[in-house]
Image (cartoon, rainbow, N blue to C red; front, side, top):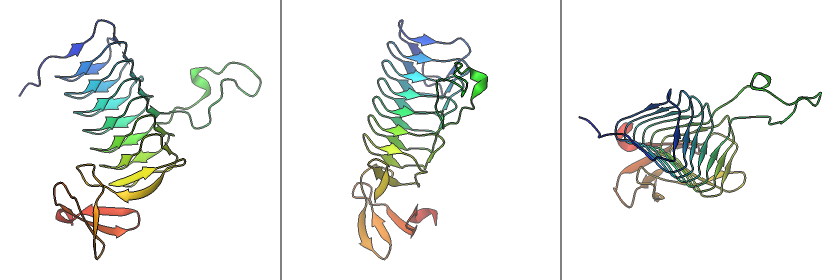
Length: 203
């Protein structure tokens, strides 16, 4: 079933080699670079940047002025908040040790990987290479320097896990015996270890 036509604002800059999925919208002043791939029904907000070869799954939202640098890989249903940044240079320098300006061949880009359903809050920074687990939630303004487990809510600088969240994004309620309940869906989750939570139905 078709998701509808692609909508690209007249002021957006979309490279001809970018692949844009059905039903996706690319809004004013945003830029989608060469070889980038967007799935179906993605929304790229005003002034957002999608780097060369970056890959987004279906139903992703990249909010205004967010920067998704290549070679980032986003799963389905990922949310990137306003002005959030996914970096791609582990050891950034403008120049080489001899003082000459770095070129593309002088460094190796590393990407941020984000699992299905995860959300990155406004002005958060994810320092590549990190992996954000499925359905995780990175709080606004956080700086992520280490991998984030699935269903984890992380906050702070550097970001640390402070709670668990369910697929609704709402913090889970501890109901004892290493089990947690979503107050929205009433789904039950099980804590296997301090860094590993699973939905009970998936056990």
